[in-house]
Length: 414
Image (tube, rainbow, N blue to C red):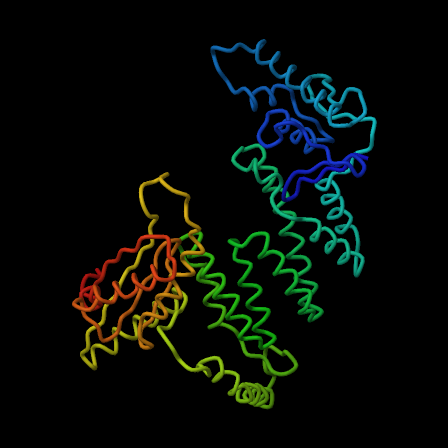
């Protein structure tokens, strides 16, 4: 049997032997094979393949482009045999349609995935849940992610992604109906690992909140914010932050809507019984040292609080914008590990500032520092302190900064 996997990556096995085509990464032969396998039942019009691989060029007539495709088909069939598949023809052209044909059986993960979902639609009860769950577990990511820049593959990928999301929504309904929190969290966690920027963290946070797992929910949110700021230079969807505020506290039996005064009292008791957990989350139990690191949304709230306190107590505070850059000229040395250096700088900043100061990471190369009870005259010495500590810690980058008084920033806001 020829086993082909295309969900989340591309691999082929003939029996237990890997089929490795030459120049597999971006060659036209491999893309042609992938297109034919993804269209195993219907095939692809030859004209569509010609346009896809050779485009429209007035200098190259249709006859020559047709010859080029025929040569490509011949090379692909030869490569398949050279890789260990039985000799024979693997591509059939009939009535203008190209199809992948083989004497040996073929197993495609994309085809099994579709069939599993189709079977689930015709099933009921536990059998339906089992089929949806198996289909969900089969999905490992976008089909052929290395080809996502091409419209043909992107369209196919979007189709399979919609089917995957459908399995999530269908299973979600069943798990909510059965109060199956364990499988709900596994479902969302898997979605987060495959599509970390599709806001699945919000569903995972809500599930943890419903189980009173506030610390776990907060950790998921913090990790999501760090990821979004590091990779996208932006905050997660506002919905993720609002789920904490809009969450409805439930009683011990997970009842969402109190039926009467006694139910309200039960929910109040549940809330008061968690005072120690709340205080533990809010106040640090270990000895406090260095500046306070927080994620960007929390840092924004802290800065707003400082600005309000200034109006009453009249003290100066500064915002310092700190940037990490590569040393030397581009290409003059081996590139530093940016994430490793940012983690080192995070520790250096925390150790170099006072416990009343706060800082946050913003994007790939930046930190923002809130320096309470400081002015511009102290910023250069604070920066020098951070820079010395960074160099002493074997830092490999170059630091620079810009500082502004928070009062000036406040007046500059339109």
